[in-house]
Image (cartoon, rainbow over all chains, first blue to last red; front, side, top):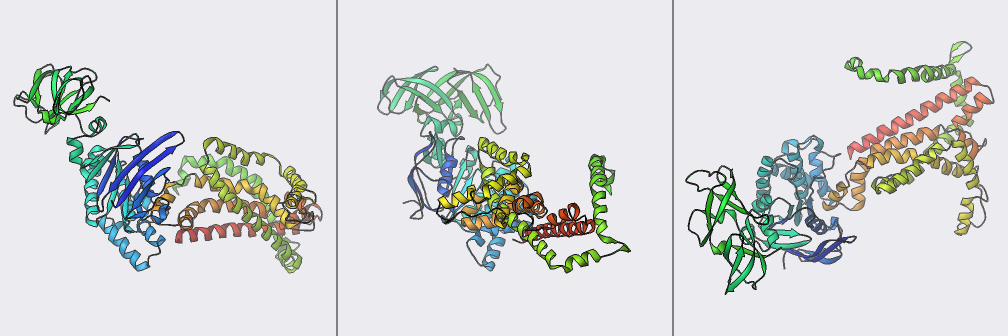
Length: 351
Length: 276
C-alpha cells in the first residue's frame, strides 16, 4: 500500500460534481504533481487530503492510518498555500515557530528548529522582521519553512510559485525540490503549469474534469500521453483528425487531409481518430517511414530551435520543432517535406 | 513640522473651527466652573464631592453598569460580527440594515419600548414563565439587570460594526493554515483570531464604554431616580438643584473616569496583543 492512498474520492458542490471517484497513491519520499487546468478538481483533491474539505465518498489513508474523518490539526499534513497565508501579526521566526508551539514542543527544541529551517530557506537574517516587510519570494520561503518546521508526514503545495515572476520561479523550483529531497519529505504539488510539473516531479497526475487521466513519470507522460487531453495539456504536438480505413495486426491505416498515414494501434475500420506526433520527432526534408508535403505558414525563431507552423485545416495542426535547418529559416509559403517514424505516431479516439 | 505646510491639512480647518468654537470652548468654560470658588481657584467642590459616601456609590454605579453593558455587548457582538463578515452578500446587506436601521429610532422611543418588554407582564417575563424557568412573573423594569439589557441593545451596533470591519479584512485561510500546522480550534482562536481582531475589540469597547458610562436618558427611563449615575446626577444638579458647581464637578469626574478607562484599557489591550 502507498504512503498516501486516496481511494474513490468523490466530491460535489451542490449539483456540480468536482471529483468523481479519484484514486491516487503516493510513495514515501515521492514528489507528485497534480497537473490540470483550473476547475479540474486538483485544489479540491489537495484540500481533501489536508482535511480542509470532507469527501462525499471514498477514503484517505496516510502512513497506514485512515485519516478520512480526522480534522486537519490531527493529520500531520502541512500545506503551503497559494497566497502563503502568513500570520501578519507575527514575525518571520514566530510564523515558523507557530506549529511547534501549537504542538506543545519545548522552547529549546522550537528555537533550534526555527533557526534550522530559516537557515535552510536562507532567511536567517530576517528572523525578527515582520512578514509584511518581505518580498513575494521571501514570503513563499517563510511559508515553506513554517510548514516544514513541524516535520509533517506529508507536504501539500498549492501553486506556491504562481505569484512570482518567471526567473525567480525557476530558481525557487530547483531550490525547493532540492530541499524536499534532502529532507525526504513526501510532497503533493498542485499546478496548472506543465513546465513546473515536468521540472519538479517524480510522477505527474494529469487531471481533467474531476478525474486523473494519466499518472506516470514526466517522461512517460510526454512520450506516451494516455489520452488526447494529456497530449494537449502537456507539451506541444502536431495533430491530424482522420478515419481508420484498414488494420493489419498492431498497425492501422488512417485517412487524413494529408493522405493515408500508418500508426500503431487497434481500431475497427471507420473509427474517427486523432493522430499526433511531438514536434521535435518530425524531420524536415529527410527520409522517414513516410512523408507528407506541407506549406510553411510561419517560422518562429527561438534561439536553440526553430518552430515551424504549416498550413492545415482548422481541426488539424502541423507543428515542427527543429534545430537542423542547413539553409537557414525558410520563408513562409515554402513547400517542405516532413517525415516521422511510425513508432512515434500517437493515436487516440477522436475527442 | 511638515504637516503644517501640507495643504491637505487645510481640509480639517472647518471641522477644527466648528469643534473649537461651539464645543471645546463652552465645555472648557463649564468644566472650569468647578475649579472656581468665591475666592478664586479652589478644589473645595472636589473635596466635598469625594467626602460624601453617597457620591462614591454613584461612581461605582456608573462604572459597574458601563462595564456590564460593555461586557454584554462584547459577548453578543463579537460572534455577530463574524457572522456578518462571513455571510453571503444578500444576507450581509439584510444584517447590516437590521443593525444600522434601529440607530435612526430615537433612544427615548427605544427606552419606552424596553419598559414594555421588561415590566412584570412583559415579553421577558412571559417567555421565562413559558420555559418554566420562573415560577411567577417578575419585574425587570427599574432593576439593574433591566438597565443593562436595555442599554446593551441600544449600544450593540457600536460594538458589532468596528469588529466587523476588522474581521472582514482577515484572510480566512489564516485559520486553515493554523489548523494544518497542528493547532486545535481554541489555540487557533487565541493565537490568530483574537490578536488580529483586537483593534476592532478595542474600538468597539471604547465606543460602548464611553457611551454607556455617560448615558442619561436610558437610566432615567429604565431604572429611575432610585439609581443615580454620574450623568443623571449631573443632569439633576443643573436641571433641578440649580447647583452648577456640583454639576460641573460631577461632569469633570465623569470625563476623567471615562477617558482614563478607555485610554487605559486600549493601552493594556495593545500591550497584551503585541506580547502574544
